[in-house]
Image 1 (cartoon, rainbow, N blue to C red):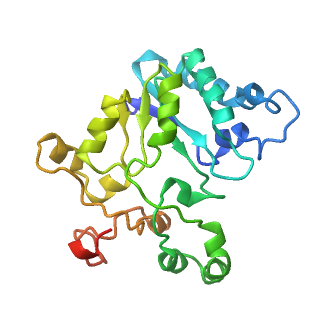
Image 2 (cartoon, rainbow, N blue to C red):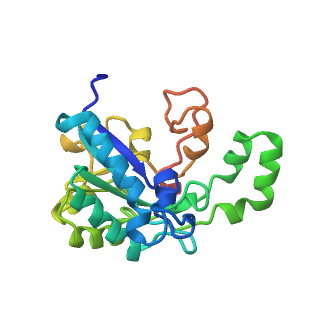
Length: 248
């Protein structure tokens, strides 16, 4: 009724449906816990009900964890069979492939440096003090590489016929073209568009080969105050843009 063309069901990052998939978090002994198929049952019913509600005129996709990035969490041995079940049900138009846990391992789906000082400053004093003590354990670091989920996603592309959406630090035109060439129907961007909302148009018009996002991750703590890129000069309090020599 609101005029949206697509709906994304969040089945990743340790949220409700993702936690049901997880052998680490799902300890239930009823129809929604146990083996891979039982742990997938709730998400399958949700997808079915959403499809029945919106009909065929609205695209329904799901953000889906390939790997939780936590000990005893979801891994390919469970996530690939789960994806096959979702595909066989036929309620989803595409899967957007991701990984990590917003609570247990958030940097797994951001990668790069942790903006710890900014996180501490964004929190109440007591929480900030806690981050100073345990922040390094909570925010494990991973090196940033363009399209960092591509190696895992390739295994899903080989196993599934349904449309797949690649994400993971995509910022360059050649990365987009490479993903489409490997059979991914779409790519998804987030931080790149926070930095530069018109990026897709610029890429399409051959005005740029890559976006302006430098993956400093300083947008992460802004989720508590209104998510935005701190380097955007059209926003109050924007930081100085690093020089090319200082850009990772």
